[in-house]
Every structure is written in structure tokens, then in C-alpha cells.
Image (tube, rainbow, N blue to C red; front, side, top):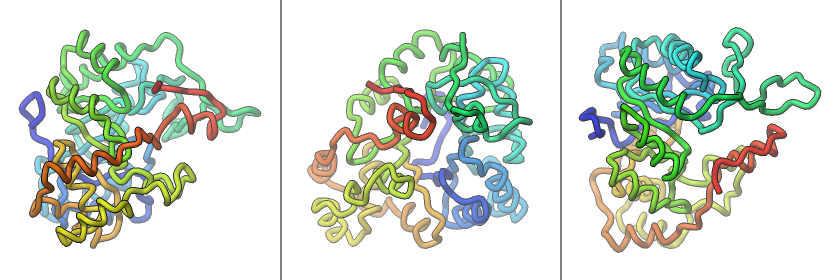
Amino acid sequence: MLNNGNKMPQVGLGMWKIPKDCCADAVVDAVDAGYRLFDSACDYGNEKQTGEGLRRVFESGKVKREDLFIVSKLWNTFHHPDHVKLAVKKTLADFGLEYLDLYLIHFPIALKFVPIETRYPPEWLHDPSAKFPRMEFAEGVTYQMTYQAMEELVAEGLVRNIGVSNVGTLMLSQILQYCKIKPAVLQVEMHPLLTQEKLLRYCREHRIQTMAFSNFGAASYIELNMATAAQTCFDTPIVQALAAKYNKTPGQIILRWGVQRGTTVIPKTIKKERLIENISLFDFALTQEEMKEISALNQNKRFNDPGHFCELAFNTFCPIYD
């Protein structure tokens, strides 16, 4: 239950890195497996294909629009208030929908506007063909301006709920000082190696639902050369022991830990058997002591950090975390 009375499923399918050629099928397979939450973003580059999958499930009669909870995110180049509505309308057109259930500000990073006709998704580099391509920041665009433009989308019926992503307690406290519509959701990286206990507690106390991405930690980043297999927590003794005890996979143990903390989890997969596995989390429960043992794996290890990857990939130092 969100702070405005709307409901959101606790397990969804993350659309990040799902290839375009199998994206529509993944949506159909996920609906068949019982998924009702789909987490997407402009920057994922597959919203048209996601929309094709949504069209197919609606036309088949398997679900109605009101049965699904569709999430997308405002990209960095659309932070200026003049461009926020433009961005959400493009996403809605790609999805073939009239409204989003949740729209998040993807990063607290305002970049210079790139017209949709020039390049979409705009991605990180302002001009990839430049002699020295890099990110270029928007001038005079504050996070408050962007958030207040997001609030207008709710008033116009384009989105049902708004929220933020990749921010911490300080920025949340600032948002709560000026917002007219309280953020319904905070989406952040959260897994046993990055438990973020204080942030999770802060969100609980202010009735902001936490949606955890990269639920398996390093697993999402190995193929991007941003992590190694040795950094995954699947093979840790506690996870292996609990998987054996409950006759579950290590992935199910980690996801159950996330669900039992009260967070929403959005694991990504295109395999039918894994779709079923990832949502089959409600026929067992971890003990309080087992929850603590998994949380003790914490290393404050963040894999998705613009302060690291932006300099390596986009020639731009862009820290957003201390």
C-alpha cells in the first residue's frame, strides 16, 4: 500500500538489459507467470518492444490495463520543466498507454536537452560524434524544478504516482520540505552487499515505499565489466545453507530477504523457468535470525555508481554519492 492509498505489487519484472528482440515475449511470459508489475525506463531502449508485449496481453484478454502496474523513469536530459511532459508522452506513446502507474526521476543528474528527433534514447553523451565526447550538464535546472514538473503530470492524469530514484536521505528530506505530492516510491540499488539500513528505515518512517533494484548485487554488472563473479552473494555459506534448508534456489533466498524487509523487488530474466522461480517467494519465510545473517553480508558495496562509471565510460566525473 503506497502512501496515497494506491497499491503496488511487491515483485515485478525489471526490464533493464532485456534485449529488444525478446522483450515483447518476456512481457507475455511474465504475465502468464503471474507478474503484474513491470519496471522500465526511457534509457533502457526497449519501451516500444515492451509496449508490443503489453498490446498482446491486452488483446488476448489475459489482463486488463488496470490489472498491471507500469513504471518508467524520466531521463537526465529531460529534467527542465519544459521537457518533463514531452518525455512522459514519448514513453506513453511507446507503451501504447494513456497513463503510467509510477513515474520516477531516474537520476539526480540534469543534463542538457537532446531533442527526441536528434537521438532517442538520448543516453549520457551530449554529442557522441564530438572529438572529445562527454556529458554536458544543464544550467539553471534544479531538482526541485524537475520534481514540481513531475507533480503536474499527476494533476493532468498522465501518471498515477510519482517518485525518485538513486537518491539518499538528505535529498529525500529536502523533497519533503517543498513537495505538494509526497514521493510514493524510492527506487535504489539494494541487496545483501548494500543493505542501506538507514535509508530503508527513513523511508519506512516517512511512508515512502522502497523498490530495490539489482537485487542480486554483482550479477547485474558482470557482463558490463563493472563487477566480478567473486562479488556475487549466491555462493556465500549462509545463502547456500538457507537454500538447502528451504529447498529453494539461492536467488529465491535473496529475493525473499528483500520481500521480507518490506521492499519491492524487480529481478530481470527472460527465461520462463526463472520468471516462475523469481515470483515464487510467498510459500516460506526466513526467521529473524536468518534475516540478520543475510544482512550481515553487507559491505556497503555499490555497483551502480555514476561517480565511478561516468568517468570511465563518458569522460565525465559525476559523483552523486559521498
